[in-house]
Length: 266
Image (cartoon, rainbow, N blue to C red):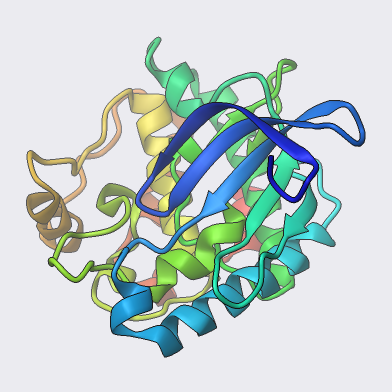
């Protein structure tokens, strides 16, 4: 039982930045998703306690900012469990039962009009977060949930600070999803909202083409491809092709901003 109120039912997923649980809110008698936030490097508390303290504080700040958002394509944060300065928070979110875009793409690519519609929905979620000063930093199919009516919901905003805290563990292992990361972020530049738009462009490319153009056999090979290799022109995208080409340019300043992208996706 978490915080005397949330009963863990089953593990839904997780990775280097925490676990997600299906839980029951015994006070309101409803099911929720419970994110157990953890730093990607388990040795952070021991090796860099100041950074660990700042990470806890930033996770709480970003989660509270996002909890104030009321947006149809941003996952709703119901509650934050703050166990104190010596542990990391739990983030209580709405449970979206329809699965993820990653699950959907296992059944094959999507038609261009459906991808454009999904892209505008995710873009609207990103614009809402950017407006309160939060970049997502991990836009990928696994973080786009699909409601039963087909509408998309962007999740895992609350761990953006965890992702930014480090990209390498103490053992040198890479943390995150290099195939969706903007080149400037791989190069260690903080980036700006348009860095999230590169990730959105790659997500749409994968959704319409059914394959990732730069994924290689290892994380290091994928990183090198994202930084240096040419992206093959999409073959199935139709009218979406020029939009993807405009987004997936390595020059940050040459990428369209969110307002321009919204018009291109109409």
